[in-house]
Picture 1 (cartoon, rainbow, N blue to C red):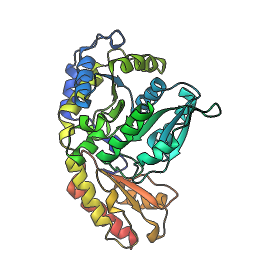
Picture 2 (cartoon, helix red, strand yellow):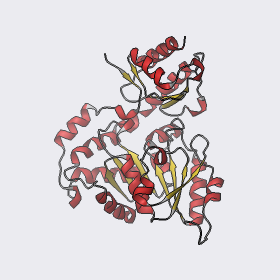
Picture 3 (cartoon, helix red, strand yellow):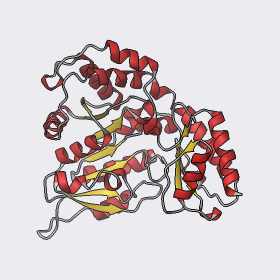
Picture 4 (tube, helix red, strand yellow):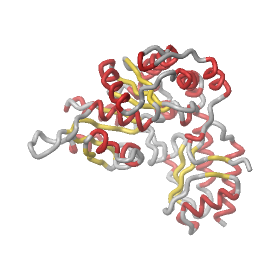
Length: 343
């Protein structure tokens, strides 16, 4: 059976153009700075983020952790939204790799209130750790792919500047945010001192993410990347796909957003299904199935029987993610399957 895979946009496959570019890529040793395709990708990415420099990393998690390590010192504290990716899905890396502790703030649709951030910044007190970093996630995965409003980003940046604290943006899906806001990605990234974004997910590259920031920051970050085993050799084969991702795939994300909206609108009419439509902004739909009397695992199992894949769970919340390769007819089939399950 050929499945409709709505588990995540991480399941996207590289396009034919990417595969051809990978085959033809000119490569060298990146640890020596001699891979021309890596160098081209990093220059392009830095320009698109409005930063001085950029660095290829193997994954978004590696990129986030390298940034935290570069910004902080052991024993310090960083501020994050309570359900952000860095806290939820990065295996406790903050404590293990950077030796920092987290101060968590409850956000609204994944966005922290700048006043709450300022209140959480530690005083100069011998008993307290120093606050050394503020992390934001844009778009916010667990909130439903929601986008941080530009005025909130700006005010957060202003708070950080007043206190001399850098801001790191987990922008794994920053191009989805840029598409939603109809602005260049650099307009979002300008409110962060460092930004990480994924070349995979909705951009379809098979491997890799980018970290961007000042030249001095990236120079220090390269050492931490090397420490974590991220110093690659002929990585231009991977970078070639990333170049196509930036040139072509960043321009097609509205299709995924439209399909997510169509899916959410259809599911929200089914008795027993509830969706906060205010959170349906990009390509993620968070769905409350509590009204149909089964948990997420059973719901996923039944959908699987109709040729549709999602991730389950023991609670009443499930997630659908649209991406390259998902068409309107796939969305319609999914809605029909859920209607049958909910009866």
